[in-house]
Image 1: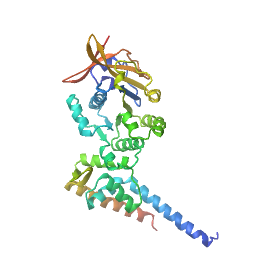
Image 2: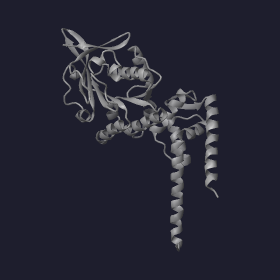
Image 3: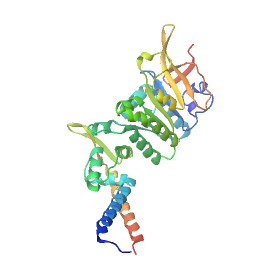
Image 4: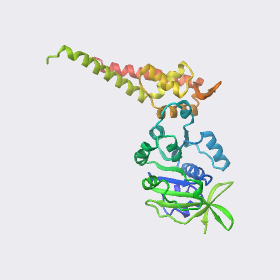
Length: 230
Length: 123
């Protein structure tokens, strides 16, 4: 159902993303990473009646919803949003283990809603920046594994530097790339003097997919994926 | 089997240990009731709740298990959250009238269940 969650995505994914896949969604700022993932989860939940969890480390729930509203992306009842703002404010003097806490938050929502099937983390960069880097990197393997064991189809958002606009996904975030089942890249490219946003599926295990960059647009109905950019 | 007198403190300690672990298990599997019980007394933020339960029961409830409960209870209309004047750092939660009803009912049911369990194993 996820391949039908955004208008035009079915032209990039020839078959369904296997349940329990962990997918990186990578791109520079302003490339619609949060919008794409939130839209996929929201539309998927509308059709399936499942529940989903969107964990935001950077924004509060309200600012995220405001942002989604400006993109005409609606939140559905079964999509739960959890943010760390209160926790970070109240425990400012303490070292917090955000990857373990995120697992606990997932456990809570899974226990509360039997059919919680989709998950998103916005973003892995924020998780790294507020945690002690070295042990966290080691914990990533465990984190990816626990998402799979939970049977959650997961989207982990990663922001790449702005200087990478229109270049290929290369050396960035290598450990995550190896651990992930899929990588979706979002970016901007200049074609004939016009800057266009694109989506490209670089990897998706057990799924046949297009490799070309496809234009992604936003209108009053939300996100649309159009034909190949070149 | 003869028990030496010097083993007695060890036995006491292990009994205490068992009791502590049992209480910890009970609290961790019934977090919501304990959180509601704390909020019956006064309004608190997540930090206050964790500290209060730790002080009273010597059990640490991790942040990742407490804040989601607060958020969902708020969504369900059982809690109301507000920032206290002059302290935008912590969001204080208090029970709504319906939340108070639910808290009192849940606490009573929980206490009854514990009592019944205890009477089942007493001879």
